[in-house]
Length: 98
Ligand code: HBI
Image 1 (cartoon, rainbow, N blue to C red):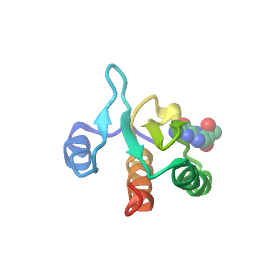
Image 2: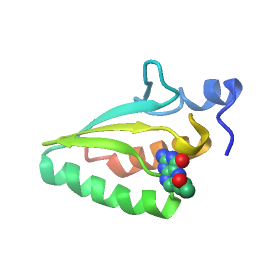
Image 3: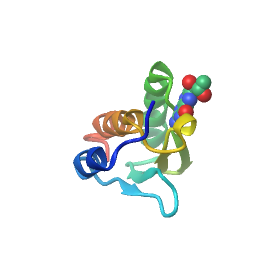
């Protein structure tokens, strides 16, 4: 899986909702804030099933109602289309909950 080209990045990254580049790393990050712990962890549980089905897994941490997410493709050592797809899926699954 090749890393995203410059033109793909300029097209795809601005279209994501609230994701930012990680300083000094070819990765994207976003903080999701939910109504409470159950909402946050329930979302993580549902995303985990999607990530496993995609065979593409987030780096994430949960504190009460917040989930910090970082996405990158470890095998490619940078951003690929799999990261874009997982980011979009995460946003879809958080819609109405955040
Ligand atoms: N998840 N984010 C991420 N990046 C990977 O490279 C990756 C993964 N999940 C599974 C996976 N790679 C495996 O397919 C390979 O490590 C074999």
